Amino acid sequence: MKKRILIFLLPVLLSATTAFSMGLPRITAYSGDVKAVPDDIPIGTQCYVGMTLAPGTWVNTGASGQAEITFDDEGTSTIILESNSVIVIKNKPTEAFELMNGGVFTKLSGFTRTEPFIIKTYAGTCGATGTSWYTLCVNSTAFVNVLENKVFVRGYSIDGFPLDDTVWVKAGKYCSVRAYKPPAPSEDIPIEVLDRMNKLSDSLASSSVVTQMERNVRIAELKGRGVSEDLLSTYNTK
Image 1 (cartoon, helix red, strand yellow):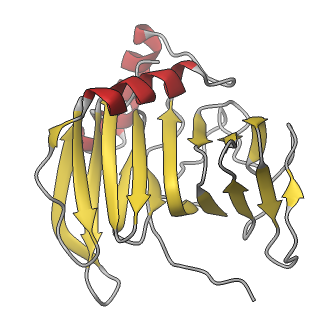
Image 2: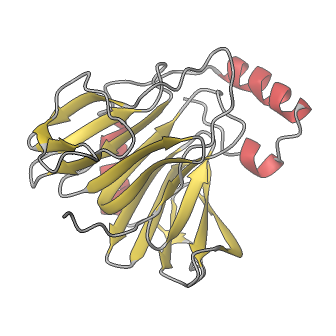
């Protein structure tokens, strides 16, 4: 029986719009050793481009492995799973995946959601509506590093409920959160982590481009729906 460690990072709450189609997450690029382990089969299969990932599937990368996974047909919600990392696909409106271990770079572009894309880890949750950030889980601590715009971070109580303390982490900053503790104050991202984030962003095989005019139109529409200023400020321009 597989040993499963519960780790949380903010999953995706997605609005239903005609421009957005969720579908099943799929592998859009990979390198090295990347295994997909379905929930009902204890044996992993080497992944391939175009492989769909059903809920409950574990994705494991080896020491030289890396995988790009897209959660929608338009390529507006994409992650890069780094080497020696593990996630479990959920693909729910309130949870895209659980980050069990390692690092993941998240790129949200376009304006297809009015709720944040949320990832869960053991230590807490983080999320945004349209931005780029890198999350690293080490033991019982999650590190949330923001490349563009801003991302919110929350911790969990010992009972598993989100804590009231929320930290908004701006571009160029990172925040750490330990299990059962509120998030720590944000600090400057170390230069080596910032360089890695930029390389990961540039390496994306699938990406949607949004012009400033399209951004302004979409934000005006979302304001009319009553979306908060905090969430609106996380929308990406590219």
